[in-house]
Image 1 (cartoon, rainbow, N blue to C red):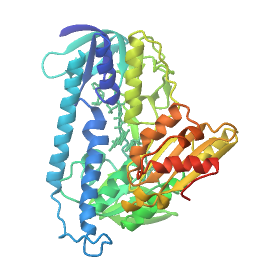
Image 2 (image 1 turned 180 degrees about the vertical axis):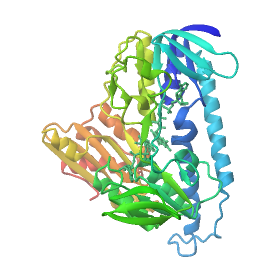
Image 3 (image 1 turned 45 degrees about the vertical axis):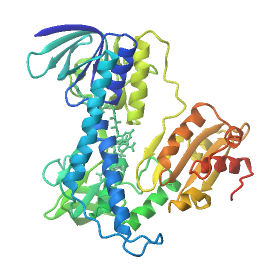
Image 4 (image 1 turned 135 degrees about the vertical axis):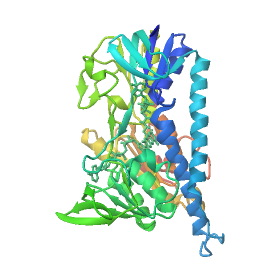
Length: 461
Ligand code: FAD
Ligand code: NAD
């Protein structure tokens, strides 16, 4: 047994844990990060980045497939082919570069990365099992950043043709018939990609609508696009189990059989709070999540928790922001979680962005509000990109124009998340945005115009 001690020990090297490690190292704190798989966690290895790589490849393929002589753009291309194994190898190369990059950044910051599986012995001590001699680490402060894992349906266990997002991002050929269980973030992002690559995709969603976290005005263009892509979306339908040919599901009390070569189950993710000796600690819980306060402290002195293990929204940028904050707190700086919003982006076709309150949420606070919406049909850049379905919408206080929420849907709109976040976080008012010169022609002009609309004097509609 090797014995080590440090000031800060971080369990998990995902976006939460590695950012915490880098910032702590920069601040001169003696830091160890323990990671049992690969640095970068879910996000870099089997989540955000690999899924966006697959989506990009599918978009490129689909674009070419549309140039069959009927394109209004006058382009004709020979029918494209895809070697998915090569696409996956390319994606793996990106993952390799990023995980190597994270290891390099930790080293540069002076934080030590140890590969192995950590288990709490008590609130100050962790044992790391790994190849070679186990290590016992004693630390003044420990950060739990163990992330999350896919929810498995008991009647549809992973294995064989039933896959999670991890396997879906590493297939060596495009399945002929793909059934996706769950019309949320992952199911729609990956399901759309496979439909664009030629799979016949059916989405089975238990609720009455897709992406229940977004309002229906935002999801409508996505629904239309799913239909155009030939994706069958079965709402109010629940998966029941495997059938001889694929998936057995139930809709309106009736059993249906959906033939499938692969069944992708994406019904949410659950926190990894049941392992690593965490149940042996005296930690308050919020359901399966570890409860934290506005400084990411748990109920146990000297133990912090960050990222997916602490609850919704389970997003990489939330985990990173928490990791950075905790490192600064451990360094003695006064920080609390005082963010006005956490942007959410869904990389469907078209993409959806939401920051702050929706019009209904704003109304529900009792404040008198005003809303302005600008459609991409009136935005020259969107038209020139054949991307004119969608809009930008702003909600502000009626009395002083303070922006409470910004949402949008449209091709390429994910890149407006930064502008939306800046506006809300810096307390912008409608006339602040109205007074800013927005570059022409860009999708960002729709933000300007939505604010002008809310002020009652939009220029281009
Ligand atoms: P994780 O990234 O899960 O990292 C936790 C790490 O802890 C893991 O590497 C794990 O191996 C390690 N670990 C766990 N237990 C131990 C132990 N006992 N000892 C040592 N190490 C341990 N979010 C976005 O914001 N945008 C997106 O576009 C997006 N796309 C996604 C697409 C997919 C397909 C998936 C699955 C997720 C996506 N997410 C996205 C969510 C995002 O990946 C997570 O929110 C983010 O990774 C959470 O970071 P984390 O650090 O909390 O946990
Ligand atoms: P999700 O919560 O987004 O969607 C799950 C869907 O499955 C829901 O619509 C739910 O109603 C449905 N469902 C649940 N049980 C069902 C059943 N038995 N039959 C049919 N439908 C059922 O979960 P996800 O897509 O697995 O993604 C998990 C998390 O990962 C997300 O919540 C998000 O935090 C993160 N993520 C984010 C991004 C992004 O930021 N772009 C992308 C992917 C994942």
